[in-house]
Structure formats: C-alpha cells, structure tokens
Length: 329
Ligand SMILES: NC(=O)C1=CN([C@@H]2O[C@H](COP(=O)(O)OP(=O)(O)OC[C@H]3O[C@@H](n4cnc5c(N)ncnc54)[C@H](OP(=O)(O)O)[C@@H]3O)[C@@H](O)[C@H]2O)C=CC1
Ligand SMILES: CCCCCCC/C=C/C=O
Image (cartoon, rainbow, N blue to C red; front, side, top):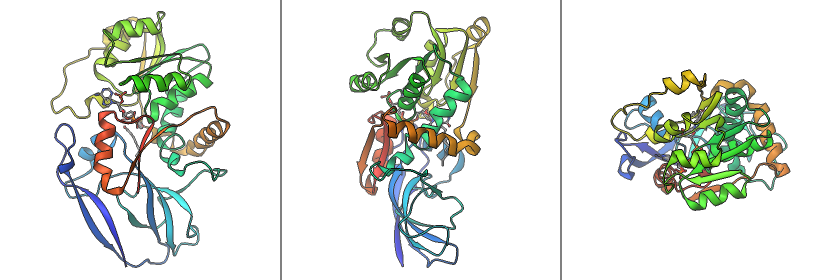
C-alpha cells in the first residue's frame, strides 16, 4: 500500500493566493488493477493558468490541478515499463495511479544529460505555447519587430529566442534588473524593466522607434494598453495570457482598444496552446532540436520539496522566477 501526499484547494483564492488557501493531505492508494501504472512525481509544474482555472474548474476540497514529470514505479500496463519517465496531468500529488491514457512519453532522442524537468517548460507546454503562438497567431516573418512581456518567464524567454531564430528583432520587458540582464544574455535585442522605467510609452518607443509588427502579450492590463498604441499598421497581437489580471477581485475598466485597432488595421487573437495538440509532437521535436543545438537556452527556477508547492506557486505569481518555475520533489 502506498501513501500519497496531495495538496488540496482548501479555499478558493480571493485576490492573491495565500498558503492558508491550501491543505496538505495524505491518501492511501489502492492496489493496481490490470492496465494501470503507479507513478511517483519527480518534478511538478507551477503555472499561471492554475489561478484562473482553479476558479473555473475546481471546487473547494479538490486536489490542485497540474502536470508533472513522473517515474513509473510499478506497472500492470504493457505499454509503460517500470522506470520510464512520462509527463502526466496528475495534479499536485507525490504518487498517483493512471490507466496510461493521459501519459505522454518524453520526445524520442531526449539526451540523458538534459534535465527531464524541461518537459514541463522549454520542451513542454510553455515552449509549445511560444512556438504555436508565434507561428500560427503572430505569423512572424524575417524582419518583423516582436514585443513580448513577462519575457524572462517560461513562455516569454522561448518567444524571444524563437523570434530571433525566425530573423526578427526582439524587445522584451520583465520585472527586475536581473531578468533584464538575462534577456540580454539570451540574445534579446532590447530589454527593459517595466517596474522602474519612468514611462512605458517612452520605454517602448526607445526600444523600437518604428513600432512593433507583433506583440506577444502574456500580461494584459496597463502594459498592453501602452503596447497596442505602438503597433505598426497591420500589426498582429497574440493574446497568450493576462497575468496582471488573474488576481484582481474587481473587474477592470478599459482599456478600450477599438481606436488603435481600427486605424492601424490590427489583428488581435486569443489562443490556448491545446488548440494545436494534434501538432504537439512536431513542436516538441523542433524545441528539443534547438535546445540540443544550443540555439535555445533554458533557465529554471527550482524549488526543493513537495511541501513547498504553494510557496513555489505564489512565488511564481509574484515574479520570483527566471525561466520556468518547477518543484523538485
Ligand atoms: N494561452 C496559453 O495557452 C498559455 C498561456 N500562458 C500564459 O502565459 C503567461 C506566462 O506564463 P508562464 O511563462 O508560464 O509564466 P512565467 O514563467 O512568465 O511566470 C509568471 C511571470 O509573470 C509576471 N507577472 C506576474 N504578475 C504580473 C503583473 N501583475 N504584471 C506583469 N507581469 C506579471 C512575472 O514576471 P515579471 O517579473 O516580469 O513581472 C512572473 O515571473 C501567463 O499569462 C500565462 O497565463 C501560459 C501557458 C499557456
Ligand atoms: C493541464 C494542462 C493545461 C494546459 C493549458 C494551459 C492553458 C493556459 C492558459 C493560460 O495560462
């Protein structure tokens, strides 16, 4: 008999999540039936979507939603051998049982030397978000100027690097000087700290006086309002996230985007990465290749210990991470 530790949503988040909104519980797992596998989480992901999706999809008392890289410790399913690592949607649990249907093997050719946690970040859902958001929504082409915010995070850092591979000029904004230094290190053409600039309008204009062809928006709110005004004619805006609004209790007034959208004939499209699930393998293969070749660099913000899942999640929402925020069990 295996005892799993799990983190439960004790109380729906009101405003910014607090550690008291979570509760640690223990669950006895039953013996495996034919076709099932027992998994042990090795790395767990903490992601912004957990904040809005908890309200939409969960009730109080549910185990927190989430994905992990897990190792199969016992198998009664011929497809999954013991010792194999998979990406699973098991939620915040140390151990869990699956019938195998929701498990994804790491992409073939994954080098032994590459951290398996990257399957939650650069070579996982956030990397795919950058890949499909740029190719299918922004439709980047060589010579475009691409703006991305939350640029030092899991999605943003890949957006900037892929746009550079695609022959674009890249401008990124992030919330600390260390993050800005990181963006310069990974080849962003221009980067600024949105928390310390005198004026967002001026910072955006200085970074690209001619304006922006593409805006990959992870943040929304005040930043997006300023950025939309500086789009070039026929510019494309990909609404990937709105993290500045996830913890707002009251609906915000504005921004009103119709005037710049109209006179600059802009396109704006929201997207969820799962739209391209049928092309997932293609995206992961491309990301793995670029990482192995050193063309896409990665950085991870690793919190040690399953006990610290709530702190890791809250820390990511506060902006403590450079690169992907993960928890090592
Ligand atoms: N559409 C889709 O399918 C997907 C969308 N997303 C979205 O992409 C965005 C980035 O996700 P991800 O890369 O995983 O997370 P990150 O690794 O970028 O971590 C979140 C970052 O958001 C920034 N941030 C937090 N609060 C604010 C705020 N109030 N204003 C501005 N920035 C803030 C912080 O960076 P800083 O210090 O720079 O402020 C923080 O580090 C999120 O909006 C997320 O919801 C993610 C995956 C899939
Ligand atoms: C369990 C994986 C769900 C992935 C979908 C993430 C979509 C994110 C939207 C905003 O952050």
